[in-house]
Amino acid sequence: MRSCLSITAKLLALLFALLFVVTTILVLFLFNVEQQYFNSNTYKEALRERRVYDRISELAAQQVVYSLSYNPCIYNPTGCDINPYMTGSPELSACLQDELGEQAVADIGSGHRAPTEDEASSVAACLDQFGQAPTEEPPLPGSQEFIRKLAVSDWQIIFANLLPPDWLQLTTESIIDQVFVYVNVASGQLSIKISLVELKTRLASEPGLAAFKQILSAQPPCTLEQLEIIKQAATSGKLDQIPLCRPPEELVTAFDSQIRAALGLVAGQLPNEVDLAQPAGSGSQPPPAGDDPRIMLNRIRIMVRLGPLLPVALLALVTIFGVRSARDWLRWWGIPLLSAGLLSAGMALAINPLVNWALLTYVNPRLSPSPLTPELGQTLIALLRSLATPLAMGMGIIAGGLALFGAALTVISFLVKK
Image (tube, rainbow, N blue to C red; front, side, top):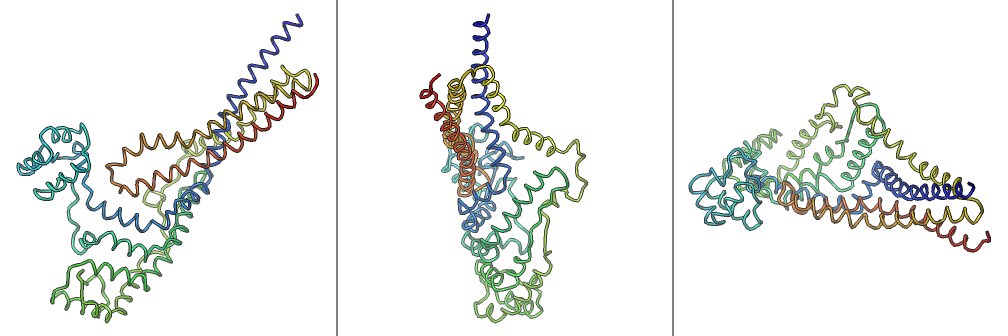
């Protein structure tokens, strides 16, 4: 009878030891996910590590120009009201078939596949020659058409003058902090406020003047009639009446003070602070407590934080059913701890390769083609890779500690007498 009870106790101890190993791996993963990804510093560090703030003027400039010329009908014709491959003008259809071939036009037009880069260039050339796709944005009205004349280098200079990296970093990190305050505190409404004081100051001073001159330099030369209008508008200080053309440099220099004053008037109309959550309806009442997903999210996070108690409880059950001596204790603790630590460390080492595989397999193909420039898309992928590293490191450090502790107990168990 005593032997039967002893065998049963050993089997139960073995079962709890196996459960300890499995739950420890799961708990370590979830615990580190909660610790890393609900911490604003994780995202701030990823942005700093990838030097996004130093490159944001370049990335934003490329994105603006790309967005102005991006035609979704080239890549996703079935999503357009009128399919340019199937229902375009006879001239457009003939051009597409000459450039791509009848089978390629049928495959792309039906949405069976997306065009290659060379095919997309050919399609864009046909659309430029024989009419744009019907879903393309119409030309911008009035003086706003000037933005289509600005090249990437022009936008980059404008952004660099008005949005310096240090201000962008300060503003972005403030936005991240405010979002996590909203997520972590299950009360109140979402409010994402940013200060525009420095932007207004730069717009009304030398950086604003430099940005305005850059816009003028990209425009066609002024006619005599436009020059006369510019002189009258600059004298009255009404910047909105100035036609957007490229006047002689000496004329621009002569009216520097008037242009600064007009830019100051424009800056004065901007608010000192804006709430980015306002368009989403921040002025409305917060959702009822029972409908707020943050409450359930915070409950789950509390359970995850308490998760380490489960492996501790299982280890206590292993002790109750399996330990009968000091050597038993060393082995019944050492081997499960060593196993859990090694397996968790292996999982930590696999996180980065798995994330890279997932990004290359599922995310990267969806970024080409897309409304994002290739450079911005690759920057986003790089940021996702950077976000995987803290999880792998946090889990690896704890797993390494468990493995070392378990190895020490196991080795000592072979050195002590029963």
